[in-house]
Image 1: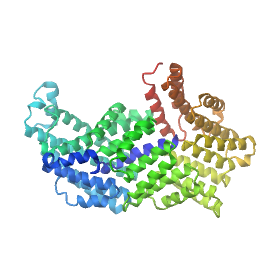
Image 2 (image 1 turned 30 degrees about the horizontal axis):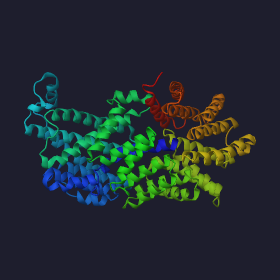
Image 3 (image 1 turned 180 degrees about the horizontal axis):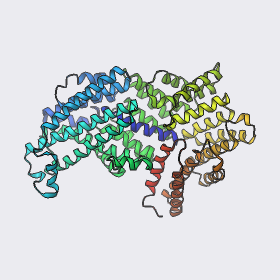
Image 4 (image 1 turned 180 degrees about the vertical axis):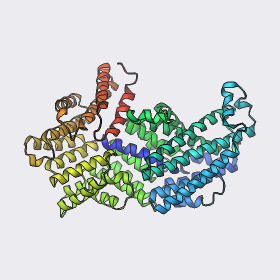
Length: 599
């Protein structure tokens, strides 16, 4: 599904921008409760007290109250993790408000925390430099277990400073994403990864002398710093593994080597550790199972686990959960999730607006134009979030059209003119929005076919396949009437759109023969389709996914795998079509499942 795939990968980008919201389970968690009932006897050292303060601050931020988090970390002094915590909280506030003054404050505090982390690094460098530390792996000059406790603690401090710099660089990277500073994004991403890579090497050296370093009373810091390491490396491995094949060589050439299995392993470990990155690691695992692997049961288990720990109104949690439920066709649950997330937001208008937008998308997919329009209108009027704006604007115009608002033609014309003005063809959803807006302006209206097909497509995205099929049949009847005034495009383009959506609905209903028949009809006219070429590679992927489902159920396994492989290969041969990048993720998933399957 296009909508679900887009949301997941936008959320991945959001996670990169929101490391400041990563925290351990809240105090209502049974695990956390057991942990801290023993705090006085076990984790009462000065380092653990710092770690607990940072956890509490991040807990406020997760619950939509970064102001209370800021107050808790108001005076960090020269402490590394208090300084990192304050910088990341201010960063989360800036990302939530979008105000220039908040962004400037966040940059200043990120720079200050980075300076402290560099000072810690310089003060704790191994005597002969880092290279000599790693020679022991090969040349046997010394072994990790031969280091004194003080040497291991010094190396731990060095290790911690690397992790801090990795996270702070990611925070700065997200500011560059917001400002679309593409060259700087690449530099920051590589720099952050190199810090993580070096930190992992140092940790291997440290743990050669034992799995623990600090005194028992300060063990809480170990849990959290290792959680940061596992999350960061897992995120990079997983995220980079999703880069389309055409860009992967470029990414790897500048220092990244993707390994999705390693990424999942690290993220699972971060979840199990229940440290500072417990929640975000859990959310990424939800996204992996739900959007990438399309596995409902494991995704829902992670969700249930999170919600049982006191995150009922955590905005970021509810944002992900609502989007997951929507992909699963649980529309009422999705609506409730977004509304619950709104209850947790305090004084962060931009966060509320993102939830508004996703709630609007959900109403849109359910055909509730009035509710969707009110939310889209509020969002596009007030948002500073470029990623959502263009796509939401054309949807707002379509809602107005379907509602038959007063002065409908002029209102929809004006908003589509704005869409064309801001649409950036480098981004799939902006390019698509601009094309639909231009089509409206050329025709001066949404045609009867537009109304029916887009309505049917919305139901398809909401997994309401039978309802989608019923409305789609009306669109097919319009095409059969051969009245060009009722069509927005050449007839063959409209036929292609109908055949694709028909096939997609059959896929959703697990009707293999009907889906295959629709695909074959579409392939007969594919060379005549120009404007809506995207439907052909998408149809191949839908068919490949259906073959995979059959194979995984044990039906004609070898034959189904063979046909699925052909579909994914043919889909990947297309280029320069709408939604190309999101589709490449689905192709990657399909090929993952085919790995090791009979040829």
